[in-house]
Image (cartoon, rainbow, N blue to C red):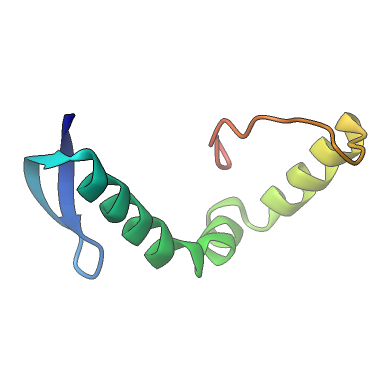
Length: 80
């Protein structure tokens, strides 16, 4: 299967438009973006939410009362 994705360079955030890639290449590209962002993700959230994202995460976990083996879904909402 061929996907159309936005290609960009993380180091200089250069959006170069849509690019057709095969599924295997797409997985690698998405993995690379995640790897580049992951190290600074919490710092980015700290700056954008002035630290409130940590309180929000703590409150969510408190409300969910998670237990071992409990299934959950991460909807990738970030601090939004």
